[in-house]
Length: 73
Image (cartoon, rainbow, N blue to C red; front, side, top):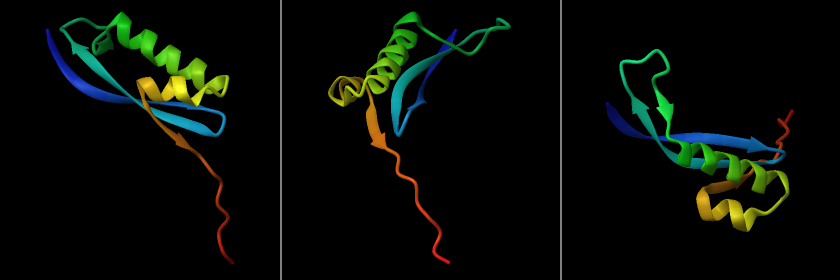
């Protein structure tokens, strides 16, 4: 079994977050996968963004606000 750091992106509404997780690589067909703690962290960040609680999301991830841009013609 090998582990390696990874970044998972979560997008909700006009916010996005970069969540640090650890990928677990094995010889199984399900590989790579995340530990239960990382899955719960992703869910907590997603729910915090969904309810607009940026402070809670920022405790677990790097949070970004997405803004549409228009192309100059």
